[in-house]
Length: 212
Length: 212
DNA sequence: ATTGTAAAAGAACGATCGTGCTATCTAGCG
DNA sequence: CGCTAGATAGCACGATCGTTCTTTTACAAT
Image (cartoon, rainbow over all chains, first blue to last red):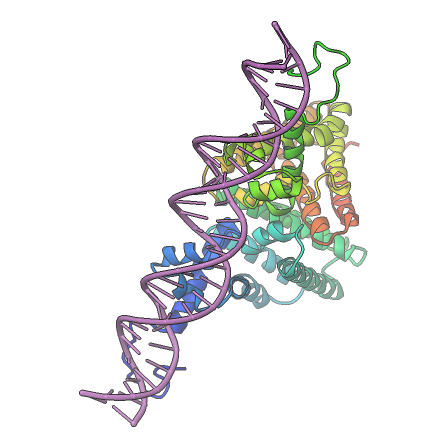
Protein backbone atom coordinates (compact mmCIF):
# COMPACT_ATOMS: atom_id res chain seq x y z
CA UNK A 1 0.00 0.00 0.00
CA UNK A 2 2.74 2.37 0.85
CA UNK A 3 5.07 1.10 -1.83
CA UNK A 4 5.00 0.34 -5.50
CA UNK A 5 1.27 0.38 -6.01
CA UNK A 6 1.43 3.40 -8.29
CA UNK A 7 4.98 2.80 -9.36
CA UNK A 8 5.41 -0.47 -11.27
CA UNK A 9 9.18 -0.29 -11.22
CA UNK A 10 9.52 0.58 -7.54
CA UNK A 11 12.92 -0.41 -6.23
CA UNK A 12 12.75 -3.03 -3.50
CA UNK A 13 13.04 -1.32 -0.16
CA UNK A 14 15.60 -2.65 2.20
CA UNK A 15 12.79 -3.43 4.60
CA UNK A 16 9.07 -3.06 4.21
CA UNK A 17 7.03 -2.83 7.36
CA UNK A 18 4.45 -5.29 6.13
CA UNK A 19 7.06 -7.88 5.22
CA UNK A 20 8.66 -7.58 8.61
CA UNK A 21 5.24 -7.94 10.20
CA UNK A 22 4.61 -11.30 8.56
CA UNK A 23 8.18 -12.42 9.24
CA UNK A 24 7.61 -11.73 12.94
CA UNK A 25 4.34 -13.63 12.91
CA UNK A 26 5.94 -16.58 11.16
CA UNK A 27 8.66 -16.83 13.77
CA UNK A 28 6.05 -16.34 16.48
CA UNK A 29 4.04 -19.29 15.17
CA UNK A 30 7.16 -21.44 15.09
CA UNK A 31 8.12 -20.60 18.64
CA UNK A 32 4.58 -20.86 19.99
CA UNK A 33 3.96 -24.23 18.39
CA UNK A 34 6.98 -25.59 20.23
CA UNK A 35 6.92 -23.73 23.54
CA UNK A 36 3.41 -22.34 23.78
CA UNK A 37 1.95 -18.87 23.51
CA UNK A 38 2.75 -18.22 27.16
CA UNK A 39 6.47 -18.68 26.60
CA UNK A 40 6.37 -16.46 23.55
CA UNK A 41 8.39 -13.43 24.52
CA UNK A 42 9.03 -10.21 22.69
CA UNK A 43 12.69 -10.15 23.63
CA UNK A 44 13.16 -13.73 22.51
CA UNK A 45 11.39 -13.02 19.24
CA UNK A 46 13.61 -9.98 18.67
CA UNK A 47 16.82 -11.89 19.36
CA UNK A 48 15.73 -14.72 17.09
CA UNK A 49 14.98 -12.27 14.27
CA UNK A 50 18.06 -10.12 14.79
CA UNK A 51 16.14 -7.00 15.62
CA UNK A 52 15.50 -4.89 18.68
CA UNK A 53 12.82 -5.50 21.28
CA UNK A 54 11.20 -2.14 20.58
CA UNK A 55 11.35 -2.80 16.85
CA UNK A 56 9.28 -5.94 17.32
CA UNK A 57 7.03 -4.38 19.92
CA UNK A 58 6.13 -1.44 17.66
CA UNK A 59 4.37 -3.82 15.29
CA UNK A 60 1.80 -4.85 17.92
CA UNK A 61 1.91 -2.29 20.73
CA UNK A 62 0.89 -4.93 23.28
CA UNK A 63 1.61 -8.55 23.97
CA UNK A 64 -2.07 -9.37 23.78
CA UNK A 65 -2.21 -8.14 20.20
CA UNK A 66 0.89 -10.13 19.32
CA UNK A 67 -0.78 -13.24 20.71
CA UNK A 68 -4.06 -12.57 18.93
CA UNK A 69 -2.33 -11.94 15.61
CA UNK A 70 -0.22 -15.06 16.03
CA UNK A 71 -3.38 -17.13 16.50
CA UNK A 72 -4.98 -15.50 13.49
CA UNK A 73 -1.90 -16.21 11.38
CA UNK A 74 -1.98 -19.84 12.51
CA UNK A 75 -5.66 -20.04 11.53
CA UNK A 76 -4.72 -18.93 8.03
CA UNK A 77 -2.04 -21.63 7.86
CA UNK A 78 -4.55 -24.20 9.06
CA UNK A 79 -7.08 -23.05 6.48
CA UNK A 80 -4.51 -23.30 3.73
CA UNK A 81 -2.97 -26.62 4.78
CA UNK A 82 -5.99 -28.51 6.10
CA UNK A 83 -9.31 -26.91 5.23
CA UNK A 84 -8.59 -26.10 1.61
CA UNK A 85 -7.52 -29.58 0.53
CA UNK A 86 -10.47 -31.00 2.47
CA UNK A 87 -12.93 -28.72 0.69
CA UNK A 88 -11.46 -29.80 -2.64
CA UNK A 89 -12.96 -33.26 -2.12
CA UNK A 90 -16.58 -33.92 -3.11
CA UNK A 91 -19.18 -33.55 -0.37
CA UNK A 92 -20.08 -36.49 1.78
CA UNK A 93 -17.99 -39.27 3.22
CA UNK A 94 -15.02 -38.59 0.97
CA UNK A 95 -14.78 -35.04 2.25
CA UNK A 96 -14.63 -36.42 5.78
CA UNK A 97 -11.85 -38.73 4.69
CA UNK A 98 -10.09 -35.86 2.97
CA UNK A 99 -10.31 -33.68 6.06
CA UNK A 100 -8.80 -36.34 8.33
CA UNK A 101 -6.09 -37.13 5.81
CA UNK A 102 -5.32 -33.44 5.34
CA UNK A 103 -4.89 -33.05 9.09
CA UNK A 104 -2.67 -36.11 9.40
CA UNK A 105 -0.59 -34.97 6.47
CA UNK A 106 -0.22 -31.51 8.00
CA UNK A 107 1.09 -33.12 11.16
CA UNK A 108 3.30 -35.53 9.25
CA UNK A 109 4.87 -32.83 7.09
CA UNK A 110 5.70 -30.77 10.16
CA UNK A 111 3.95 -27.64 8.94
CA UNK A 112 4.60 -26.27 12.41
CA UNK A 113 7.83 -27.43 14.01
CA UNK A 114 6.08 -28.22 17.30
CA UNK A 115 3.19 -30.18 15.80
CA UNK A 116 -0.33 -28.87 15.39
CA UNK A 117 -0.47 -25.30 16.68
CA UNK A 118 -4.04 -25.64 17.90
CA UNK A 119 -3.48 -28.95 19.65
CA UNK A 120 -0.80 -27.19 21.67
CA UNK A 121 -3.11 -24.29 22.43
CA UNK A 122 -5.88 -26.67 23.45
CA UNK A 123 -3.72 -28.14 26.18
CA UNK A 124 -2.20 -24.81 27.18
CA UNK A 125 -5.48 -22.96 27.68
CA UNK A 126 -8.10 -25.62 28.31
CA UNK A 127 -8.04 -25.11 32.06
CA UNK A 128 -7.33 -21.37 32.23
CA UNK A 129 -9.73 -18.47 32.37
CA UNK A 130 -9.57 -15.52 30.04
CA UNK A 131 -9.74 -14.46 26.42
CA UNK A 132 -7.26 -17.03 25.17
CA UNK A 133 -9.25 -19.87 26.69
CA UNK A 134 -12.35 -18.46 25.05
CA UNK A 135 -10.65 -18.22 21.65
CA UNK A 136 -9.51 -21.82 21.85
CA UNK A 137 -12.95 -22.97 22.99
CA UNK A 138 -14.59 -21.08 20.13
CA UNK A 139 -12.25 -22.61 17.53
CA UNK A 140 -12.88 -26.02 19.02
CA UNK A 141 -16.63 -25.54 18.91
CA UNK A 142 -16.39 -24.32 15.31
CA UNK A 143 -14.53 -27.43 14.15
CA UNK A 144 -16.90 -29.70 16.02
CA UNK A 145 -19.84 -28.05 14.28
CA UNK A 146 -18.12 -28.30 10.93
CA UNK A 147 -17.46 -32.00 11.36
CA UNK A 148 -21.06 -32.39 12.53
CA UNK A 149 -22.23 -30.77 9.29
CA UNK A 150 -19.98 -33.03 7.22
CA UNK A 151 -21.46 -36.05 8.96
CA UNK A 152 -25.03 -34.87 8.41
CA UNK A 153 -24.37 -34.28 4.73
CA UNK A 154 -22.85 -37.73 4.38
CA UNK A 155 -25.88 -39.20 6.11
CA UNK A 156 -28.18 -37.36 3.72
CA UNK A 157 -26.25 -38.84 0.82
CA UNK A 158 -26.68 -42.29 2.33
CA UNK A 159 -22.95 -42.73 2.87
CA UNK A 160 -23.19 -42.93 6.64
CA UNK A 161 -25.50 -45.12 8.69
CA UNK A 162 -28.36 -42.84 9.83
CA UNK A 163 -28.42 -44.56 13.22
CA UNK A 164 -24.98 -43.23 14.09
CA UNK A 165 -24.70 -40.56 16.81
CA UNK A 166 -23.09 -37.54 15.18
CA UNK A 167 -21.35 -36.17 18.25
CA UNK A 168 -19.99 -39.61 19.08
CA UNK A 169 -18.62 -40.15 15.58
CA UNK A 170 -17.09 -36.67 15.55
CA UNK A 171 -15.37 -37.49 18.84
CA UNK A 172 -14.08 -40.81 17.53
CA UNK A 173 -12.62 -39.13 14.46
CA UNK A 174 -11.08 -36.28 16.41
CA UNK A 175 -9.40 -38.45 19.04
CA UNK A 176 -6.95 -40.29 16.73
CA UNK A 177 -6.04 -37.05 14.96
CA UNK A 178 -5.15 -35.39 18.22
CA UNK A 179 -3.19 -38.31 19.61
CA UNK A 180 -1.32 -38.90 16.37
CA UNK A 181 -0.15 -35.30 16.59
CA UNK A 182 1.07 -35.57 20.18
CA UNK A 183 2.76 -38.94 19.86
CA UNK A 184 4.53 -38.23 16.60
CA UNK A 185 5.78 -34.95 18.02
CA UNK A 186 6.83 -36.46 21.33
CA UNK A 187 8.75 -39.29 19.68
CA UNK A 188 10.06 -37.21 16.79
CA UNK A 189 8.59 -39.91 14.58
CA UNK A 190 6.25 -38.78 11.78
CA UNK A 191 5.66 -42.46 11.12
CA UNK A 192 3.43 -42.61 14.17
CA UNK A 193 0.69 -40.75 12.33
CA UNK A 194 0.06 -44.03 10.53
CA UNK A 195 -1.52 -45.29 13.74
CA UNK A 196 -3.99 -42.45 13.42
CA UNK A 197 -4.45 -43.10 9.73
CA UNK A 198 -5.42 -46.71 10.34
CA UNK A 199 -7.73 -45.80 13.23
CA UNK A 200 -9.51 -43.26 11.04
CA UNK A 201 -9.85 -45.68 8.15
CA UNK A 202 -11.46 -48.29 10.37
CA UNK A 203 -13.76 -45.85 12.13
CA UNK A 204 -14.96 -44.49 8.81
CA UNK A 205 -15.41 -48.01 7.52
CA UNK A 206 -17.68 -48.86 10.46
CA UNK A 207 -19.72 -45.72 9.92
CA UNK A 208 -20.87 -46.83 6.48
CA UNK A 209 -24.46 -48.03 6.21
CA UNK A 210 -24.95 -51.77 6.75
CA UNK A 211 -26.33 -52.18 3.23
CA UNK A 212 -23.03 -51.20 1.62
CA UNK B 1 11.84 -38.62 61.40
CA UNK B 2 12.89 -35.51 63.20
CA UNK B 3 9.78 -35.33 65.35
CA UNK B 4 7.72 -37.56 67.56
CA UNK B 5 9.14 -40.84 66.42
CA UNK B 6 10.50 -41.62 69.87
CA UNK B 7 8.01 -39.49 71.70
CA UNK B 8 4.47 -40.80 71.38
CA UNK B 9 2.89 -37.70 72.88
CA UNK B 10 4.88 -35.17 70.89
CA UNK B 11 3.19 -31.82 70.84
CA UNK B 12 2.17 -30.75 67.32
CA UNK B 13 4.81 -28.39 66.01
CA UNK B 14 3.64 -25.12 64.66
CA UNK B 15 5.14 -26.19 61.39
CA UNK B 16 6.93 -29.33 60.42
CA UNK B 17 9.27 -29.07 57.48
CA UNK B 18 8.01 -32.28 55.94
CA UNK B 19 4.38 -31.17 56.15
CA UNK B 20 5.22 -27.86 54.52
CA UNK B 21 7.10 -29.73 51.84
CA UNK B 22 4.09 -31.77 50.81
CA UNK B 23 1.81 -28.74 51.08
CA UNK B 24 4.06 -26.92 48.62
CA UNK B 25 4.05 -29.87 46.25
CA UNK B 26 0.28 -30.15 46.41
CA UNK B 27 -0.17 -26.52 45.49
CA UNK B 28 2.50 -26.91 42.82
CA UNK B 29 0.57 -29.81 41.24
CA UNK B 30 -2.62 -27.75 41.29
CA UNK B 31 -1.02 -24.77 39.60
CA UNK B 32 0.95 -26.83 37.11
CA UNK B 33 -2.06 -28.88 36.04
CA UNK B 34 -3.83 -25.65 35.12
CA UNK B 35 -1.04 -23.44 33.82
CA UNK B 36 1.80 -25.83 33.09
CA UNK B 37 5.12 -26.54 34.74
CA UNK B 38 6.67 -23.66 32.84
CA UNK B 39 4.37 -21.10 34.42
CA UNK B 40 4.99 -22.56 37.85
CA UNK B 41 6.85 -19.85 39.71
CA UNK B 42 8.41 -19.85 43.14
CA UNK B 43 7.12 -16.38 43.92
CA UNK B 44 3.62 -17.30 42.85
CA UNK B 45 3.75 -20.48 44.89
CA UNK B 46 4.90 -18.52 47.93
CA UNK B 47 2.16 -15.91 47.62
CA UNK B 48 -0.47 -18.61 47.15
CA UNK B 49 0.75 -20.41 50.28
CA UNK B 50 1.23 -17.29 52.39
CA UNK B 51 4.93 -17.78 52.85
CA UNK B 52 8.10 -16.12 51.64
CA UNK B 53 9.87 -16.84 48.39
CA UNK B 54 13.00 -17.95 50.18
CA UNK B 55 10.94 -20.11 52.51
CA UNK B 56 9.61 -22.04 49.54
CA UNK B 57 12.91 -22.00 47.71
CA UNK B 58 14.79 -23.52 50.64
CA UNK B 59 12.78 -26.72 50.28
CA UNK B 60 14.16 -27.42 46.79
CA UNK B 61 17.23 -25.22 46.32
CA UNK B 62 16.60 -25.02 42.57
CA UNK B 63 13.66 -24.69 40.27
CA UNK B 64 14.64 -27.87 38.46
CA UNK B 65 14.29 -29.85 41.66
CA UNK B 66 10.93 -28.26 42.36
CA UNK B 67 9.77 -29.32 38.90
CA UNK B 68 11.15 -32.85 39.27
CA UNK B 69 9.55 -33.30 42.68
CA UNK B 70 6.25 -31.93 41.40
CA UNK B 71 6.24 -34.52 38.62
CA UNK B 72 7.11 -37.25 41.10
CA UNK B 73 4.29 -36.17 43.40
CA UNK B 74 1.90 -36.23 40.45
CA UNK B 75 3.06 -39.73 39.58
CA UNK B 76 2.12 -40.83 43.08
CA UNK B 77 -1.33 -39.29 42.69
CA UNK B 78 -1.72 -41.05 39.35
CA UNK B 79 -0.64 -44.35 40.87
CA UNK B 80 -3.12 -43.96 43.70
CA UNK B 81 -6.05 -42.73 41.61
CA UNK B 82 -5.63 -44.70 38.39
CA UNK B 83 -3.15 -47.54 38.63
CA UNK B 84 -4.25 -48.93 41.96
CA UNK B 85 -7.95 -49.34 41.12
CA UNK B 86 -6.94 -50.81 37.74
CA UNK B 87 -4.68 -53.39 39.36
CA UNK B 88 -7.52 -54.37 41.69
CA UNK B 89 -9.37 -55.87 38.71
CA UNK B 90 -8.60 -59.45 37.60
CA UNK B 91 -6.00 -59.85 34.88
CA UNK B 92 -7.06 -59.80 31.26
CA UNK B 93 -9.68 -57.81 29.45
CA UNK B 94 -11.41 -56.66 32.60
CA UNK B 95 -8.20 -55.08 33.85
CA UNK B 96 -7.98 -53.15 30.60
CA UNK B 97 -11.54 -51.99 31.11
CA UNK B 98 -10.75 -51.10 34.71
CA UNK B 99 -7.72 -49.07 33.68
CA UNK B 100 -9.65 -47.03 31.14
CA UNK B 101 -12.51 -46.49 33.51
CA UNK B 102 -10.14 -45.49 36.31
CA UNK B 103 -8.57 -42.88 34.04
CA UNK B 104 -11.90 -41.50 32.90
CA UNK B 105 -13.12 -41.36 36.47
CA UNK B 106 -9.95 -39.56 37.55
CA UNK B 107 -10.61 -36.96 34.87
CA UNK B 108 -14.29 -36.76 35.71
CA UNK B 109 -13.72 -36.29 39.41
CA UNK B 110 -11.27 -33.47 38.77
CA UNK B 111 -8.46 -35.01 40.78
CA UNK B 112 -6.32 -32.22 39.36
CA UNK B 113 -8.12 -28.93 38.83
CA UNK B 114 -6.66 -28.56 35.34
CA UNK B 115 -7.46 -32.06 34.13
CA UNK B 116 -4.92 -34.85 33.79
CA UNK B 117 -1.53 -33.58 34.89
CA UNK B 118 0.33 -35.76 32.42
CA UNK B 119 -1.85 -34.89 29.47
CA UNK B 120 -0.93 -31.27 30.11
CA UNK B 121 2.76 -32.14 30.34
CA UNK B 122 2.56 -34.17 27.15
CA UNK B 123 1.47 -31.13 25.18
CA UNK B 124 3.78 -28.76 27.02
CA UNK B 125 6.97 -30.72 26.46
CA UNK B 126 6.33 -32.92 23.44
CA UNK B 127 8.18 -30.61 21.07
CA UNK B 128 10.88 -29.27 23.41
CA UNK B 129 14.34 -30.56 24.06
CA UNK B 130 15.70 -31.27 27.50
CA UNK B 131 15.21 -33.32 30.63
CA UNK B 132 11.52 -32.54 31.00
CA UNK B 133 10.79 -33.75 27.49
CA UNK B 134 12.71 -36.89 28.26
CA UNK B 135 10.78 -37.48 31.48
CA UNK B 136 7.47 -37.11 29.67
CA UNK B 137 8.61 -39.38 26.86
CA UNK B 138 9.76 -42.00 29.36
CA UNK B 139 6.44 -41.94 31.23
CA UNK B 140 4.63 -42.19 27.93
CA UNK B 141 6.69 -45.14 26.83
CA UNK B 142 6.15 -46.81 30.18
CA UNK B 143 2.36 -46.59 29.94
CA UNK B 144 2.39 -47.79 26.36
CA UNK B 145 4.40 -50.83 27.40
CA UNK B 146 2.08 -51.45 30.31
CA UNK B 147 -0.99 -51.37 28.10
CA UNK B 148 0.84 -53.60 25.64
CA UNK B 149 1.41 -56.14 28.44
CA UNK B 150 -2.24 -55.95 29.46
CA UNK B 151 -3.26 -56.67 25.89
CA UNK B 152 -0.88 -59.60 25.57
CA UNK B 153 -2.16 -61.12 28.79
CA UNK B 154 -5.75 -60.75 27.62
CA UNK B 155 -4.82 -62.40 24.35
CA UNK B 156 -3.22 -65.28 26.21
CA UNK B 157 -6.44 -65.71 28.18
CA UNK B 158 -8.39 -65.78 24.93
CA UNK B 159 -10.26 -62.58 25.74
CA UNK B 160 -8.83 -60.60 22.85
CA UNK B 161 -8.67 -61.64 19.21
CA UNK B 162 -5.08 -62.84 18.61
CA UNK B 163 -5.09 -61.22 15.16
CA UNK B 164 -5.29 -57.74 16.66
CA UNK B 165 -2.26 -55.44 16.41
CA UNK B 166 -1.24 -54.59 19.95
CA UNK B 167 0.22 -51.16 19.25
CA UNK B 168 -2.81 -50.21 17.19
CA UNK B 169 -5.24 -51.27 19.90
CA UNK B 170 -3.22 -49.44 22.55
CA UNK B 171 -3.38 -46.30 20.39
CA UNK B 172 -7.13 -46.64 19.91
CA UNK B 173 -7.68 -46.98 23.64
CA UNK B 174 -5.38 -44.12 24.52
CA UNK B 175 -6.86 -41.64 22.05
CA UNK B 176 -10.35 -41.36 23.58
CA UNK B 177 -8.90 -41.11 27.08
CA UNK B 178 -6.73 -38.19 26.07
CA UNK B 179 -9.42 -36.36 24.14
CA UNK B 180 -12.02 -36.87 26.85
CA UNK B 181 -9.64 -35.17 29.24
CA UNK B 182 -9.01 -32.17 27.01
CA UNK B 183 -12.60 -31.61 25.93
CA UNK B 184 -14.14 -31.98 29.37
CA UNK B 185 -11.58 -29.57 30.76
CA UNK B 186 -11.96 -27.07 27.94
CA UNK B 187 -15.75 -27.03 28.22
CA UNK B 188 -15.84 -27.31 32.00
CA UNK B 189 -18.16 -30.24 31.45
CA UNK B 190 -17.27 -33.52 33.17
CA UNK B 191 -20.17 -35.03 31.26
CA UNK B 192 -18.04 -35.05 28.13
CA UNK B 193 -16.01 -37.96 29.45
CA UNK B 194 -19.02 -40.11 28.57
CA UNK B 195 -18.03 -39.71 24.93
CA UNK B 196 -14.74 -41.33 25.84
CA UNK B 197 -16.50 -43.97 27.90
CA UNK B 198 -18.65 -45.03 24.99
CA UNK B 199 -15.74 -45.03 22.54
CA UNK B 200 -13.74 -47.26 24.89
CA UNK B 201 -16.65 -49.63 25.39
CA UNK B 202 -17.09 -50.10 21.67
CA UNK B 203 -13.39 -50.45 20.94
CA UNK B 204 -13.05 -53.09 23.63
CA UNK B 205 -16.13 -54.83 22.30
CA UNK B 206 -14.58 -55.05 18.86
CA UNK B 207 -11.36 -56.45 20.26
CA UNK B 208 -13.06 -59.55 21.61
CA UNK B 209 -12.43 -62.78 19.70
CA UNK B 210 -14.95 -63.51 16.94
CA UNK B 211 -16.03 -66.76 18.65
CA UNK B 212 -17.46 -64.90 21.66
C1' DA C 1 18.72 19.01 -1.92
C1' DT C 2 15.10 19.33 1.45
C1' DT C 3 11.39 17.69 3.81
C1' DG C 4 8.14 14.24 5.52
C1' DT C 5 7.13 9.74 7.16
C1' DA C 6 7.30 5.16 8.64
C1' DA C 7 10.44 1.59 10.59
C1' DA C 8 13.58 0.39 13.69
C1' DA C 9 16.82 1.14 17.49
C1' DG C 10 18.08 2.78 22.02
C1' DA C 11 17.48 3.71 26.68
C1' DA C 12 14.95 3.49 30.71
C1' DC C 13 10.88 2.26 33.96
C1' DG C 14 8.94 -0.95 37.41
C1' DA C 15 7.84 -5.73 38.08
C1' DT C 16 9.07 -10.38 38.53
C1' DC C 17 12.09 -14.13 37.69
C1' DG C 18 15.70 -17.67 40.03
C1' DT C 19 19.13 -17.66 43.37
C1' DG C 20 22.35 -16.56 47.17
C1' DC C 21 23.49 -14.76 51.80
C1' DT C 22 22.23 -13.48 56.37
C1' DA C 23 19.19 -13.10 60.23
C1' DT C 24 15.34 -14.65 63.12
C1' DC C 25 12.48 -17.85 65.23
C1' DT C 26 11.35 -22.17 67.58
C1' DA C 27 11.55 -27.10 69.16
C1' DG C 28 14.24 -30.44 71.38
C1' DC C 29 18.45 -31.71 74.08
C1' DG C 30 22.07 -31.07 77.49
C1' DC D 1 18.79 -22.29 81.39
C1' DG D 2 21.76 -22.07 77.15
C1' DC D 3 22.84 -24.56 72.81
C1' DT D 4 22.05 -26.49 68.42
C1' DA D 5 19.74 -27.29 64.19
C1' DG D 6 16.21 -26.81 61.04
C1' DA D 7 12.47 -23.91 59.08
C1' DT D 8 11.33 -19.60 57.56
C1' DA D 9 11.90 -14.63 56.55
C1' DG D 10 14.34 -10.58 54.73
C1' DC D 11 17.11 -8.51 51.54
C1' DA D 12 19.90 -7.95 47.48
C1' DC D 13 21.83 -9.50 42.92
C1' DG D 14 21.55 -9.71 37.91
C1' DA D 15 18.48 -11.05 34.18
C1' DT D 16 14.41 -10.65 31.69
C1' DC D 17 9.66 -9.35 31.31
C1' DG D 18 6.10 -5.77 28.99
C1' DT D 19 5.89 -1.08 28.04
C1' DT D 20 6.94 3.97 27.15
C1' DC D 21 9.56 7.65 25.28
C1' DT D 22 13.08 9.56 22.39
C1' DT D 23 16.25 9.27 18.63
C1' DT D 24 18.20 7.57 14.43
C1' DT D 25 17.78 5.64 9.90
C1' DA D 26 16.15 5.20 5.10
C1' DC D 27 13.24 5.88 1.70
C1' DA D 28 9.49 8.91 -1.20
C1' DA D 29 7.85 12.98 -2.65
C1' DT D 30 8.75 17.46 -3.60
